[in-house]
Length: 218
Image 1: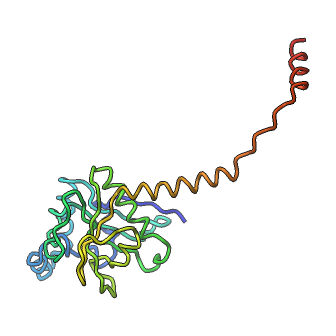
Image 2: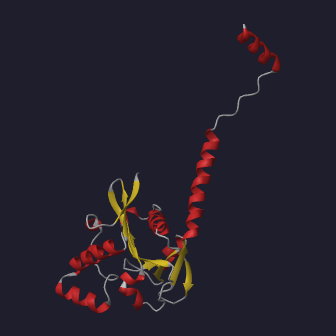
Image 3: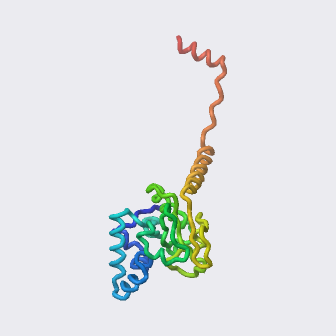
């Protein structure tokens, strides 16, 4: 089963499942989102948002593929590009963090550990851009797919609560913890290589070595 992550671009935007493809919960403030929904313009607004952030900041999402089939996605970016952040009671996010806004693993792929793969892909990209952390708002009463991550999921992939709230705590993933993920992988590889590494040959007795040298001299 081959897994890979690819940046979210205008070309891969249609890989997002419905209704996420046209959802603008994070991309617009509450009033603008309501107007766009009333006018049937949410898909266009999503494209416009993605176009702008691609120009200003770069890719703001990732799509996870399993055997070249879309299996999940995540959307993230600086808080300034995600107006809905300000509506959460535990806002604002820290200045050194990127917001992991929303995402999903498709139902047929749940239980395969892909959520961590998805977050790792985001963390790797954000770390390369010089940010120290990811922050996200959880939903502690999550019961069905929504635009907010379940708090339990965020904690399961390494986030810790930095501001408590009964419904929407704010959580943080220090990107230095990605070093732990990498160390785990490297340790597993070393164990594997150690298992298959040939044992060193025993030393050649001095008498045999002298005889070989004498033969070569002749």
